[in-house]
Image (cartoon, helix red, strand yellow):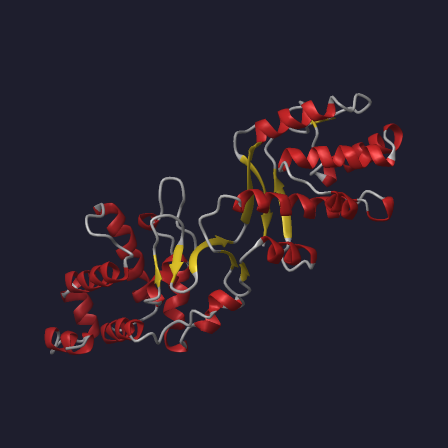
Amino acid sequence: MNNNQTFNSMTENCTDSEMIRIHPATILKFIEEFCYERGILRKGAEAKKMDSIVDDILACVIRSNMTMGKLYDFSDDVKDDLVFKTEFFYNGGNVFDYINPKWRRFAQNLWKKTPKGLGTPCAACGEGELMFLMLSKHISKPKKGDLYVANFGNTELKGEEARIMGTVDGKEFRIKTLKMIDRFSVLTPNPSSRNMLPAVELEKKVQYEKHWKTEFKINLTLSSQRLFIKNWLECVYPDVSNEVIDRIFFNNVFNHDILVKEIVKLLFTDMIKNRQFNALILLGDGTNCKIIKDQTTFNLMIDNNNIILGTDYFRINQSAKIGWYVS
């Protein structure tokens, strides 16, 4: 007996509105069982975690004006692999183009939900995560990370205002760069705009580009400028090639925009060096998702401006890891 047959036998004389009013426990029970089947819920889960997930799904059912019959249809279509095309994970683009139009409105409502029950104390559930888990039998929740996709592997999701994070914290970075600048005794650190502490904030173009261009011009030869930038970047990540410096000083002129691109590439290298995922997906709002499988792909996207760079996240007086916003 399939879901619709089961539903019909249980609610033979009920309209959908009557079903919602008279049998709320039946609706919630069905959603719970669906979540257990999909691995969205695990047996023995805390009640508050279970409630946060089930309540969010129920809200999406209601907002999508789904009848009870359609809810059961959805469950059957997931089992028959008729809802979501997992080719998305290879191609990227608009995620909603890979969803059966029959279920697109429901998926768009699921996209917005970030139930606390799916996250951990250290990693909150982001937009899109619940949706993916609901739409395909080939997608599951791994013990670590965001998603496991059959024949693709573990996948890390980044939503809007994604940050590429290094492993060095802001306080540590400030100390490293101040020790580094001591080797260039003719240079003067910039005063941090927030607390006037001495710092070496090359990453901040608007505030300090004039300061550092003046320091370079007056105090350093071109070869010393190159060495200084190399040493500074090594505070971000310890392995910096001469090719990186060549790009920053193309035509023997320091280029701050290229410096920023190289900073973000190094942050990505640092982020993925001990990674436990096969791909990173920049979801944004879902309409132009970017699949990043390796460093080469990431670097090309940065160089070609397929990935847009936002503001820095270098908090030099905090213990937060340094990073950069991207979209």
